Image (cartoon, rainbow, N blue to C red; front, top):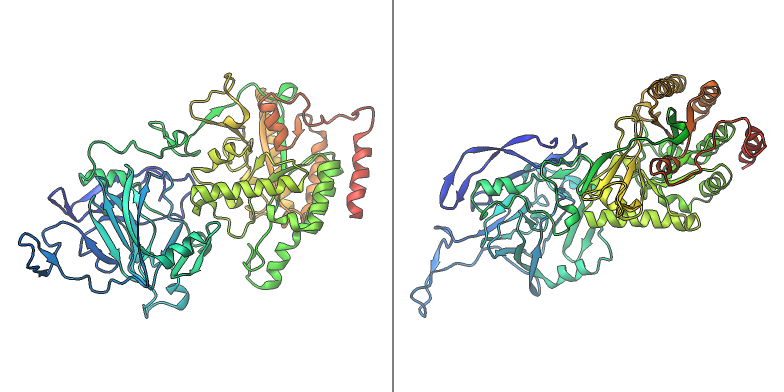
Length: 583
């Protein structure tokens, strides 16, 4: 569902004593800009009838008690029968939880229990949202693999009014309750076995022990699951006092500005860049971006077949493809930005090459997440995404002598609405995840102004356009056609910058598994030779462009001049290329 899309939602049940069977058209809060594959579940007001396949609703409605049992001691008490089927193995545990509003509407985890019927009771004045899916473990119409996952055709977001609760059946898929705006307080009826299992986890990961079968939805790779912003729906039911639709998380950095779309992330706004480039203000700045990616050996790579040999060929292309591209660019004294999966720090051959390119050819090392197999950062909760970013940056920083990367490209463009803010907090300065405009721009934390006394590097990110339209891996062009298209793209941008006096940026996006093949490297080398005669092309790393945009670094990428420090740069770099050929 695209951000801002309207969806008709059927609301059946009673709210504030009124029967409501109407379809209501609601504008939901925008989701990520690139969310065509998102599957949005339906929101419904929980009733005894529509929850009967997932559990037993606890409410104060007219038929809440059902069959009555009399107790001789209390004439004013009407007590219902036991809930048939409820059971808590061994030792029941009752806890209380407070739940705040979350900006992330992604359903990242689902779990089920086979040895207990878990209960959630909402106390206080706030309603809540529970994502519940019918049990799949005992269905004859599903395969064994399908039984291990929720059935999304039978999963909904149930709105529970304040003071209500639900005891879910064994095997019911569920997420933890979600706030619909105000802080939510809930009573949770669990078992000691499940609590002990959950508390034993050092970090979020799938589970299958201690009566807790928990799956990470991103691992299945069939698209992201989200729920709509529940606030308009809840407000239409009259379940909130006043206007609670302005409530967001407790973090001031996450609060949205009226009218702000989340095109670039929560807590960030776009700021245009002007008057940058210095003596190269009428140049096109060309940034070679080389993707060096790792893949889980147990998971098929992005090949046309899942056969093991083809998969291993793709995974292992890093070695020869990287060496080949390094040789091509070093022959032309062109620095590159290599964005690297942090799991590759254990690959000695790849690391030896990158250390050499960094030291002798002025390459920049950027971060590309941990690996490219389970690349769906968009399926991660904010805390888990922050941990993934931190681990990737720190691991690469240690591997390259405490030189932590300042440039980031998310695996498979899996950007959440929290990603830019988390990256700026982590010290990243350059972001390659947006491919708009052919010019750099800044993503600035709200309430910060570029150039002000309080403005600092971690107040913003410089975004460079990741030129996906001339990416070898995303186009269907052969090596020769790709090189011609890339050359035409650069020459046109050079012409426009020369005529307008305004610098532009082209990121040459290359994957070693495609651009590093013999035919592609051959055509790339010929293209670079043809571009030698073009005067207003500036080759630079992403870090160098960011430095120029922020006017921090006086020394930028080496100009294309026949003399640098009194020596012939091609003689010097040809020597470096010779070293690469020996590796």
